[in-house]
Length: 368
Image 1: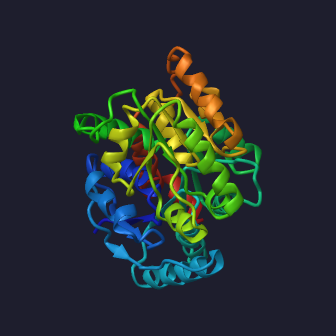
Image 2 (image 1 turned 135 degrees about the vertical axis):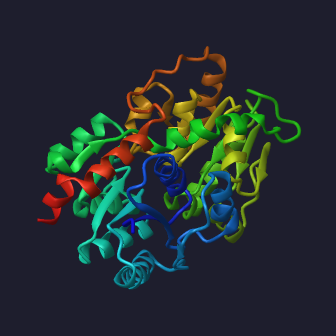
């Protein structure tokens, strides 16, 4: 019987990364049985369920159904649920992706049970030490047995932080694997009525620091409205942003087409034919960079500085947004600077390393 490898998905951004590994395992030699475990942190079908079909993934084998509550409550409940599962169905290793509370909970539960923990997308740092995601990603890295970094610079940072060189592996950007796999299907989809290729921009906002404070959210809504005077904007609204707008009594920004949350293919279809994107999402920064799409990140820092170094991303304040949009529209399109290891082969590198870990000397050394 093949050993089980549990792939932990808590929130929507985890899925494209895990999908790269899932498909690489499905298309390669059999040495383990991948099992999808959904903690439940994103339980809304519009935010999570539709993505399985879009990404060619099966429904989760294990669904814990843990959602809601404070950071501590969600982490604690998810940790208990993971421990209960793994006491009766023990995997050879657990792969956690990203930096949400459910990922931290799974990593803690597995580590305390002596199960190998592999962090996919390890080493990201924004320097914002009070940011919940920054706390989580640093904590997951600290207790993981294996750290899969998206690029060599990030791997080097992990080693500089004191992680053993043998534990760190630059495997590449798994999101790019998934984007390349589905790009043709996304481009084949029809754009929503009234939109033309290069004739609109995309907006996404969901982070607590942007949408949970009324003064910050109203500044962003004003900024988006001002930017829309230069370019029509489409905003697939996150449930959190929608709920906060309603609770504060704010109205949608003028000149912006707001849509419900989109599935993976629908969003990629919208993004790959846009002129630019304004976002606070880490994943969208990567997606835009891989597409050669100008990105304005509405935050004071980013955990993905490689997107800025590549020339496709720029940090912007709400006050700067309209000006930056106008500048992009006037400037010629920039050539995409290839990023090493963003080549669609991250899944293969992860698979090869996993096989070494589960079958070879590395695994025996770690157990010893």
